[in-house]
Image 1: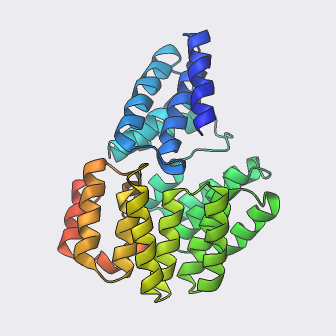
Image 2: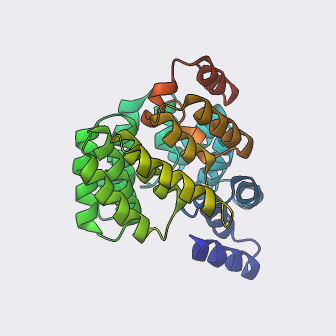
Length: 294
């Protein structure tokens, strides 16, 4: 992702009227807050500037509207993000990767539509590990865990070195209480993703779900130490505390994530890992504050 950011930046310097370069730069920054992960505020400030420029140069460029959708999602402007997605889809219904669109549909209470849309993307680009991993992720958020596991295995067969396929498969295994398999997949993902803190946090959640409090707390300590050197998503730490039953600490980390505008909030309405918090008034208040209907 860092290489993509640099490549798109150079392309924009070479041709200041290349809308695709700016759209690619915006999209790379937006994805970077998930996959590197970059600090959200700085990354999305850069994404916003690039997305606005892309739309100004070419209002009919699909990728420019996808970039704007990502920016608006970060703003928690869900209707605006949805409009940008619909504009993009209108420009090319056969485009295979709509990124945030699937989760937006889930958050809007349309899981079946989200799955249909992502399956269509898979039909258009069946050999893409990115699309394949996205299928597994959406099935996970739609709580269709058996299908998510089947999809994860299929994507790994396609590309055994694609880190997020292992991570998403691990998440699905957790929800099926297949903890040994989950840990195995997540440990692979951590290596392939070069110690991505978000994936490390999922491993901590797996240990917590399996009842191994000692290992879960060890992961929290590792993430705390890691945060001194790089950005660690507070949202992901909150998930571990939630599964440990330590609700006050979970909400403290969610509040920290709120101040950071952590990208995980796009999933707040559908996130299985936070189910233990849903009935708490603090969670309902948090949903309202990020623009979801509680």
